[in-house]
Image (cartoon, rainbow, N blue to C red):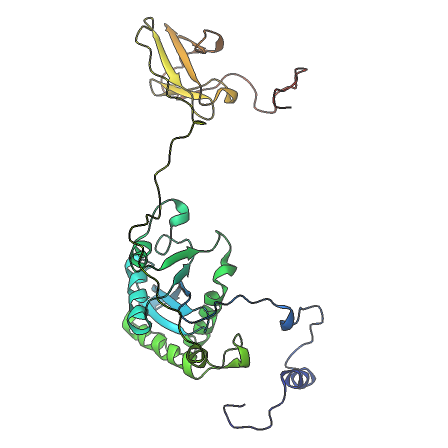
Length: 326
């Protein structure tokens, strides 16, 4: 209403009351008021960018992916990119598009997708390597916590409402044109409810000086190789003077070992221990390194690949002995 030149303008509370009396809005007394919300926002533009991808469709039901990159402080739509799939190449393309227009951000927030930031999965992604060379800090939300990227998720909904009113695009290029038009309207014409004063993202971007670009830290590795600690089990060397028919095996975490393509179960409580397997024809005797018998097995018939220990699964019976950990 301010943008249309109306003066004076009713307050939000007055408009809400009018809408309820007209029957186009309902009263929700149990719902928390907006004043009770605690919003987190970075202090300046380019302090943090948020990147996410969402699926959309072309004519004929063909699926595609729309990458959307926004500024956390101003909600400004920095760049969008339409691609055939969610790939690292497409993620780098939309980042570089925003980089050329708005400079280098301090951080890049995304989810844990393989094409975006798979660092929590134990390896680097192409996008992470690309932005790290510029000094940008790639950060992610916790797994299964999409609210961390809530601003971008909400941005997807606004885009869908606009695209659903447009003709369905035949190609990626046509959809890219529609998305670019939406970004211009979103940035310069549409007042944003999440911004103070409900200004446009362009106004919020212009109102604050952008954050300083980071300095590249090329000499600081992101991941260091694991260092051996004293708590790890020492490697046990294979004895060279074992009797004929005797081999040493290390049990798995489940207390099993493999011999001649067959898995034999000893017991779960012996997991990761080294044992001796004594073979006498079809009979197998498993002992610890001190010679105490742990289990005995018979070679199975051809085709059988797993031999249990004959005990029923379930909780172990309690003993009268006091646990050393108690």
